[in-house]
Length: 297
Length: 313
Image (spheres, rainbow over the protein chains, first blue to last red):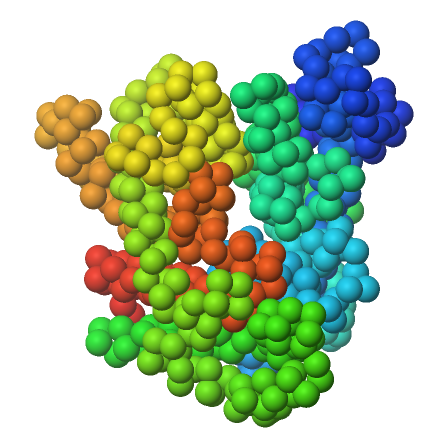
């Protein structure tokens, strides 16, 4: 972690902070309309101007950060959990179960994730799904579209790790499946998948915005960048800032997450489990001790 | 060799079958009552229970799901994808009108991505750590991070609103195709430029490149003649993946520029709960996606003998 480029972490971190503290950062109610101030440029009262309903753009951008962040976090955690469980189960158990699960994963990957999410939004628009709000429909659709990537990755890690000699050694020593899985395999899986997820966060923010842009995501009163952008498209002649501001916010967030992913890839991953690092240091010191004794003897 | 080829083809067909079955199940399970939807659309609010029951009976909606899927599959294989609930036209007719538009988008975008990515990647590798390299790296990062609908919006703002060079809506003549093509090509070009750049760097440090330098070849000659052919396989694989992802670009671009393609139809089908249109479009996407992937795999197997060997378990 010594050479870790902390500066690269900063933009993504700022986005998360803005998302968390958005209620205290907003200067206006993001849904409050003011027909006396439509499509205004930046002013002391409205730092980024107002939109076609006189709503404060600054507050809507800040509110949009929260919408994206919360939806992204839900989808990421849920997709990761489902993917890791199914993928590592398939890899560990092997045999026919693995074959069936791989087929399921392959089918889920037979279309781009976003197309699946779109199709699921269509499915959820049926009357059987009226009990879900639009927001949750989007979260569930994205989760169901996203888990398969993590499942495939987890399975690959498990299969590779199971071939290591130390796993065999552990088995010979009488370690149970649960022990081997939780102590040896899972840390490897999580180490890789969590890193991938941190880079994937940008793609997910983009997916959320794209769904809303296409009118199939977050419903209007909630501020959301993709939806702000598509609304602004009708007023590009009067005030292009309505399109440019949410677009820049979105791009900045995705760039920051992509930078994060690139940094992770270059750094070969900081240790996911601190305890292991400690154990390794202890082992190294013990080896030194033995070597010294041998020299003395 | 031939057996491996056949294996891949059969696997791809099975995948198409399974994926369409899954979408069929999801899409038919969703709307609640398709017969009611059809009746409502045919007779407005005046649709009564008797009419709904008759439609359900006529369309065989009371049959078990596997029977309905088999019937749908039989029809689909003969080119009959049903009638769109939204437009009332047969899906085959809709496709005949819309596929050329989407194909033109994808082809133009694909060619542009190919040219741009090779140019950027090779220029970056030639500069190797210099200003051009770092500049191109930054551009690729931004290109891979900018949402395609924002790119489209910016192009419209700059070229249509500010400069007044191209119409904001629809296509007329080659210049109006340029904005959609650029929009759709920017993301894949950025990703692919990175693939070219990184793989060139990798091959340039291989022994045969060193041999090239030792023979007295210039850096440019080694780069273009020795290193470039070696990146063909990773490039092709990524290009295939990016080309299929361009479907999403097409959906967005068709909406922004008001083009009547398959992507725009798909979104309208979702919004108007046109489940027959949805199923037909999804089938088209699955066939496109799986066959492009198959094609890339087969080409890679042709190019690299190592991939032809059956995998060891």
